[in-house]
Image 1 (cartoon, rainbow, N blue to C red):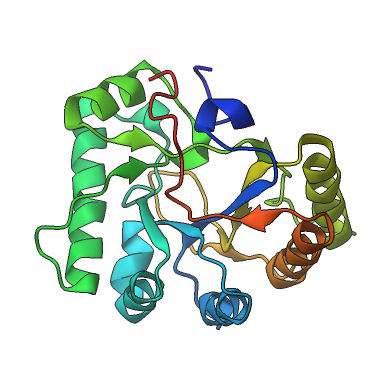
Image 2: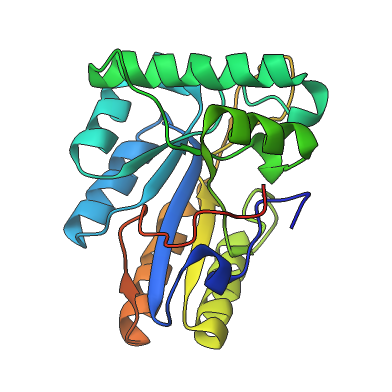
Length: 227
C-alpha cells in the first residue's frame, strides 16, 4: 500500500493472537521513556522503539537502556522531516545520521539499522527507492489509533479503538507516540503525550484478557511490504 506504513496483519506475518507494540518519536524526556520501560519490564514485553536521532543525541542513556533491555531500535530519521520535502540523497543522509547517533549511544560504531519507519508514516516512491538501495525494511503498522491529538477523552478513545481492533482481528502491530514530534524542517520542541502510560496499561490488560500474546518486535515473517 503505497502512501503509508499501514499494512494488513497477514502482510506483516502476524498470526492470530499475536501483538507487537511500537513507540515512535523518542527517547522522551520528563521521565516518559523510563516509566514506559519500567512498565514493559514488569510485564516482560519487548517492543519496537522507533527513535529520532536528534532525541537519541539528547538522551543516549535511554537509547542504551532500550537496547540493553532487548527492545528493537528502529531508525525513525534524524530530524523527523517529512520524506515529501527531501531528495533521495537527503533522505539517505538523514537515515545514516540517525544510525550514527544510535551507534554512538549503544557503543557500536558499525551499527546499521535493519528497519526504517518514515516520519509521518509516509511512503512515497523516494522512500521505496532508498529502502531498496540501502537494503533496509519498512517498519509497518496494522492499525493507527490517532494518538497524536490532545483532545478530551483521548486516553479512553485510544484504548477503546485498539481494544476493539484487537478483538476484531485477534492480532495487531500498534503504534503509539512517546512525544508528538512535529514533521518540520525546523526542529521545535516535541509535545508530551500524558495518555501514553494509561493506554499501554489498558492494552496489556486487553491482550491478556483476550488470550493473545506479545511477540518480539522483529518477529515479522513477511519481509516485502510493497516497497
